[in-house]
Amino acid sequence: MPAAIGAALLAVLGLVNALSFAGGSTGDMALVLAFNALPSTAWCVFFAILPKAPRRAASIALLFAILPRAIYVALAPSAIPALLTVCWALFLVVLLRGRGVRLALVALPLMILTAVSSVGDLVTILSSVNELVTGALAFFWRNNPGLTLWRQVATPAILLFYWVTQIRFLLAVRHE
Image 1 (cartoon, helix red, strand yellow):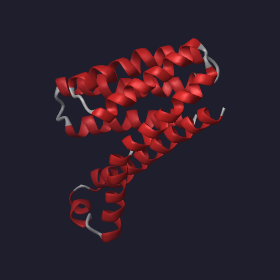
Image 2: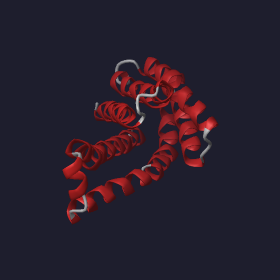
Image 3: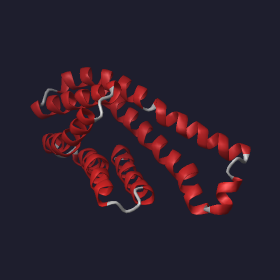
């Protein structure tokens, strides 16, 4: 369940950021929904129903999380996100086929890629903590305290929770 909550929080983060920064553009909102909110919501559903219906969970994730992510990676190629998408797809296919032993084997490279992928967000988190500690946010706090609180406290907390739950999920799969 923590991984489901992490995915749900990531979907909320993407939606709030899109609403805050897209300027209300319909095209931008459609892209955010297609490539961020829909996949995050699908991952939330995947993690929530995985214990009871693993094959249905894998099917939902393949269709609504991996497919949009694969399209996004094809449009904006980058090595780590592409490898992560391929490994998750492989993980889900193995889960669909019901091969539990091989699932643990796929979890290891997936865990490594997830950790590498989280490094960029870790820098964001550390930067936010640094700005909170040094008092560099006073100007922004006076002008827009809600946005400052969202960007400097809520966003790093959501990102940290998300990545920790992803790694914990993969560690659990690895040890089963």
